[in-house]
Length: 119
Image 1 (cartoon, helix red, strand yellow):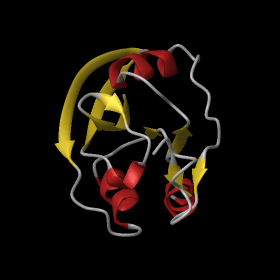
Image 2 (cartoon, rainbow, N blue to C red):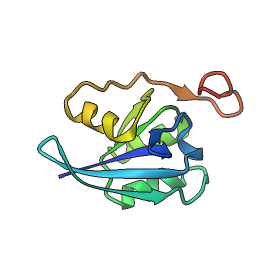
Image 3 (cartoon, rainbow, N blue to C red):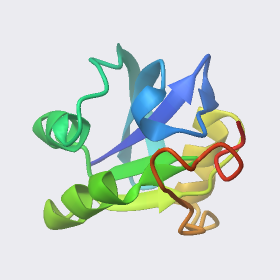
């Protein structure tokens, strides 16, 4: 089983990971979604969210954009990071499961992310 988390706002992939409204967590097996739950974002504290998601057993995180610090922590915890995703969270997870979703490497630089993250 694999757990995929999507940083989301109203069921859509959010463009800025740390400030998303919630995380939709999809439990998948054999490329199928078997269960999903939505948990509210517990708060944007640097370094907290990657550990929080790791403790929830997440294997993959999908977001629109994400800061380099968060990416580094996810990488250290062997959680795959996919950034540059857009659209409906469930559809994006299905694309990932079919091997069609590729990370664009869209890293947000704090305090300079107004243009890059779709704001």
